[in-house]
Length: 127
Image 1 (tube, helix red, strand yellow):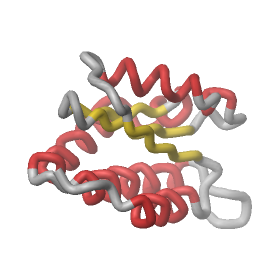
Image 2 (tube, one colour):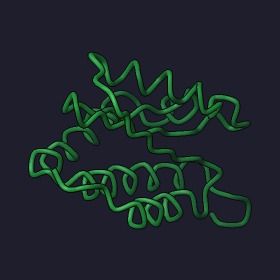
Image 3 (cartoon, one colour):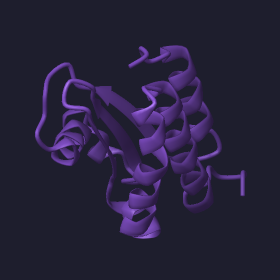
Image 4 (cartoon, one colour):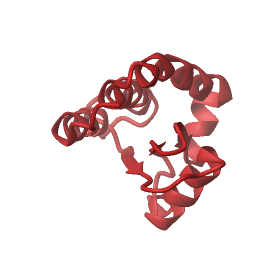
């Protein structure tokens, strides 16, 4: 498993958040987790992203020791894109992870989330 390139991930986040009111976060767990989705939900709350006024934050959680990851969208973004979107993003990210390319997986998932954030939650004057 190659280390995550923080610069590339930060650039992907900046791009995803550009022209949108959405927030995107990435959390890398240093320990095992039996349930990455639950850990992602908890991480969203720990980071207080659920307090974002638009309720459109998305968190990507990676647990390398468990070989698990999850994508979790807060209420408003989830209502707009639905469960199928999140499942598709996870499915698209999985081959990257299987190749040991955590950075590529995150870039892809963040880009997909950014597309939906810009579509459903554009900043004023960018639509």
